[in-house]
Image 1 (cartoon, rainbow, N blue to C red):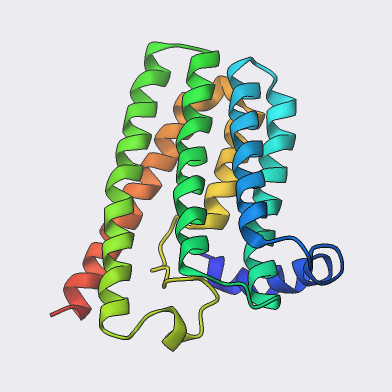
Image 2 (image 1 turned 135 degrees about the vertical axis):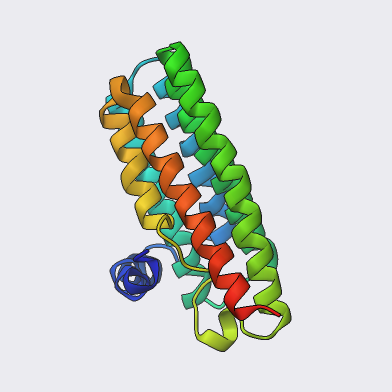
Length: 203
C-alpha cells in the first residue's frame, strides 16, 4: 500500500552504505546472505528463540533492501538478480510462519497457517501474471519509472505491510493464529482489489 511512497526514501537511506561499504560486493552475494540469514531466523523461531529470530528477520530485511540499491548504484542490475531475489524472499515468507506453528503446534494455528499460505499462493498468481501482462503491454517498471526489475502492481498488502505483520508474528507468537488470519484476510482483499482493477483496465 505504501511501497511506492517509501521506495525513494529507502534508496536514500541505503545509498551511503551501498556507496562506501559495499562497492566491491556483488548484489547477488547480498541476496544469498539475506536468504541464509532468513533461514537462520526460521530455525531460531522453530526452536522458540523468538527474540533472536526477530533480530535475524530484521537483518534479512535490511540486506534484502540493500542488494537492490547496490545493484542500481553500481550498474549491476540483472534479470537473474531480480528473479533470485523474489524466489528466495518467497521461501523465507513461507518458512517463518511454518516455523512459528512448529514451535507452538496448535490446531487453530495449523488452520490459520493453511489459510495464510493459500492466500499467498493465490496472491502470487494475481500479481505476477498481472505484472507480466503490464510488461507485455509496455506499461511496466521501466516505463513507469519504477526501481524494481518488473512492475509491482499495488495493493493493500505489499512489502512494507508484510514486514510489519511478520514482525508482529515474531513479537507475539502466542497470537499467531489471529495474526495469520488477519493477514490472510488482508491478502484476500488485495487479490480482490487487483481483480477489480484488471477487469476495469484489461481488455
